[in-house]
Amino acid sequence: MEFIVRGVTIVNPERCFTADVWVKGEKIYYIHEHIAPKPPIKEIDGSEQYMLPGFFHFGSSLGSTRTTNDEFKEVQKSWLKKGFTIYVDELTIVHVPDWRKWLGYELAMHHNSRLAHRVRLRVPYRHVSEALIRSVLAHRIPMLEMMVAPSDELTGSFWSILLAGFAKYRLSVKISFTGEWSLREKKRWLCDKLSLLVSMLEGRGIPLVLDEDEGIIRFLSSVKYLPWGYVAWEMNNRSSLSFRWKQFGQVSLAYAYTEQEEKREHRLRRLVEAGARLPAKLFSAYPDKGAIVPGTEADFFLLPKKNLANDATFWSPTFVYTKGRRSKQLFFATV
Picture 1 (cartoon, rainbow, N blue to C red):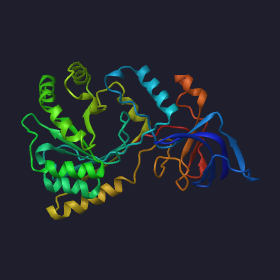
Picture 2: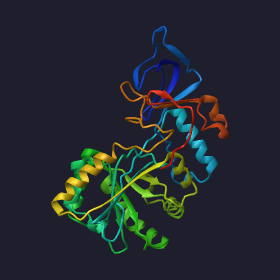
Picture 3: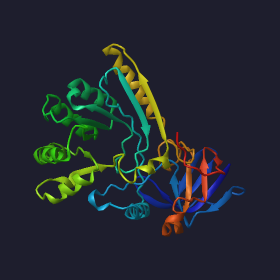
Picture 4: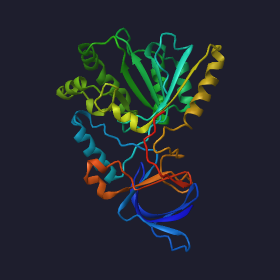
């Protein structure tokens, strides 16, 4: 199938612009502000349409200002008009008692984050070491999530390597609390440690991420001396919006092994590389890069601009194209 979409507004992660798009089979062949007519190639009028990657979601993490579903939809609309779409894969080492022998991997869309993280490594803070940090740096794992217990102190020889390496490769740090914490203890810990964390990370351009919690956000917003504005928030599963994960599908992969220490590094590398090639599904589409650029696979859909005025039709595209064919049935796939 070959066609040209005329005057469509392309929405990519980094910008939004109007152009003609020439599609040949499974690939985006050419994008230009004006492509000369190519009879007998068919044309589609895209002047009143947005063209979005088939693999996408909207960022909505605005701290304490996002509280209702209606506000969430307003954020989606305003960000789309500005050209922002974010796509996130997660590869997570699940926290279990014997995490060195049992590693669970999950590749999934994360729906409430501005963070363009394709892979993350999630480990208990007490197990973070210089060797682990070097592994993160060697594989360019975009986010290290450290799970802090009440007995943990923010000390360790690995911090100097982490700060230098994460700044160089633009990696991110996330701090999450284990289940033993009470809300009061979390507040006290943040009062004592947040300023120190931000001072270490902000000057080096290393993002700091915390789980979104209504009580924590309200508390931090009320304490003026805390630098909470530097924090990026991620939605937790208890959020009222967590059901929206189902719209984007999940691909889960679990593996258990008891190999010797020297083999684990190779195994981690292989799983990270494999996971990065398995995006979650939307409209059964698997784009290469989550962006509409020449040379990538032609996975996209057209969304009428007028739909932005009506919540009921917001998720109703008029045209869905997946790997060289037009999709006749639209569905949000869950695995």
